[in-house]
Length: 87
Image 1 (tube, rainbow, N blue to C red):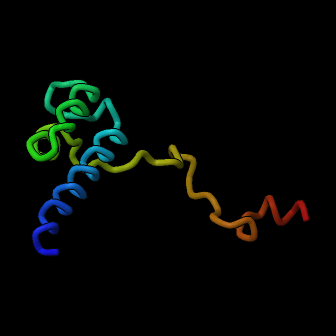
Image 2 (spheres, rainbow, N blue to C red):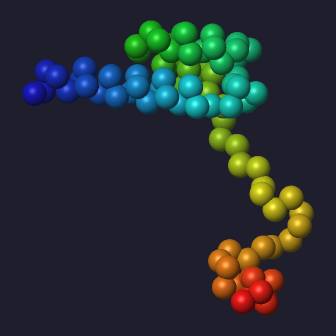
């Protein structure tokens, strides 16, 4: 089992990197290459994924705000005065 563990870890790391590359926003990919090129590079099991995480992966960004300056909205229907008025 211990002989298989390094290969299993490499496989998991490779699959995680491939999915991360595929789901990343193409406008935020770094490294001056397109997302398709990064995906093709990440096909190389160890080297490609290390390059993706080191050079191509978008850095941590904050998600876009959903409220767009409209103020705070109620979370649940029973907190919404308009909904309660309609009952």
